Length: 295
Image (cartoon, rainbow, N blue to C red; front, side, top):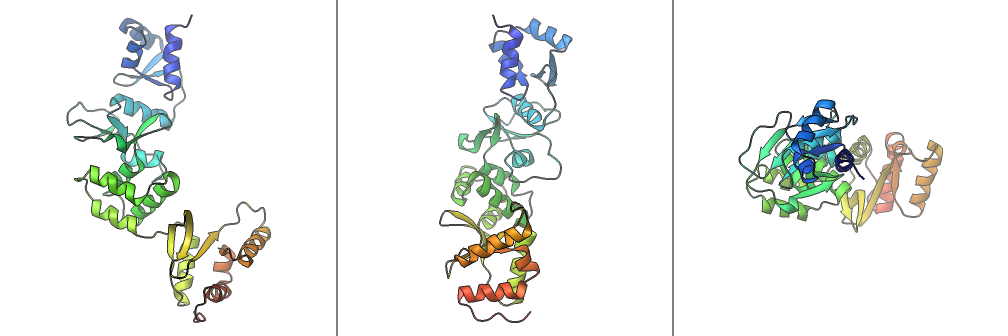
């Protein structure tokens, strides 16, 4: 016969080692037993009404789910910097502390948790990721918009698209559900702008400028594919690739050269930083542009 503690541990196993008082009571664990478990160390208090079961190792996800459980989902979700980190939309150097948005304008303070209270948190703006209730990618972008620079916000929009297929239309729908959110105009501009994601991309654009060649759209969705650089006027796309997964640089450069011979345009670090003039001449010839000017 399964013991009460096995039941508690089973619930916690699905929640990164955390369980709430309400869940224990619903599972038949009475208040005196909860007090005994707290006294003998089988439970450890994390937040008011939220416990760690046994000696579970610390983890960021455990901290995040405990914070959400303390704010009583389903009308609460991890949000802000913490949601950006969990969803890989904005990843700062240090993992951010728990931040939770709650659909209520009342309630007590929660030590160790940044709590944002709103009148409504729409069900379409809440996801469950790795068992953690979290604001959707679109809602997270809306929450981060006042805090990020325009360039970093554009990059966050791109990451939401890459990791979660979040489209401008989905973000616009989220803004429609939350019409009073600050920095909505800033977010609209970020959605419509291009962004560079690496030193290689920045250097490629600088090379084009120096030689007077047309600049592409960058990191956009084209015909269902995510492309690094695209010139819509001539339907030309270019990938900018590293040689990390090719074993040797020689093998990588040879592979990229084969791609170009088959009209699949791709350039490498060496093409841009070491053979810049030859690269722009090759690109201009492929695109049918006039000969590049000398830098």
